Length: 173
Image (cartoon, rainbow, N blue to C red; front, side, top):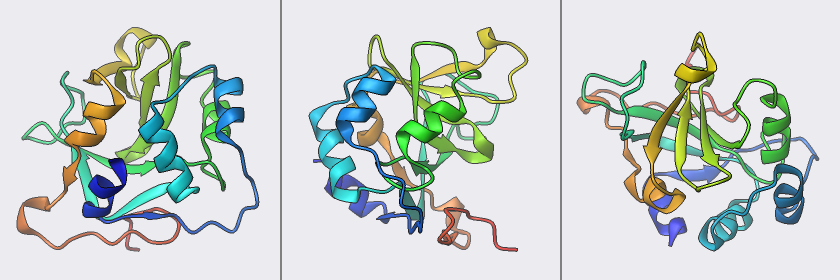
């Protein structure tokens, strides 16, 4: 189910020379979370982190400080099971920053994170520049399923499309 949606968005596995690898069982155990079966299949299909050559965006349910004028924001990467951007490594990196009970699964523009609630399964945007924990989390979607289904191509209002380099960056300098 998710594979077709992501394929239509120009998704591909991020090339990564790292030999770091984790299993879904390790993710569940170390991060204390169960992800939907469809998402597990997606992680297994791509293995590594997922980037979007066409650019991908979503519209959070709750307005965030970095939404575009029309209420959207970019999804830069979804973390996978292998490489430098694997789920365990990224969650260890943000362990002391993201409030307890949330697991980061991806990154939005500028280093803010896309998180799933380990309690209810809702998807949240963690704004890394928030001054307090109380102002750092914003509701994106009620579930991972509705989040994936809401992703759309970032057409940049007809401007030139961005190319994702092998490091997972849209930067062109």
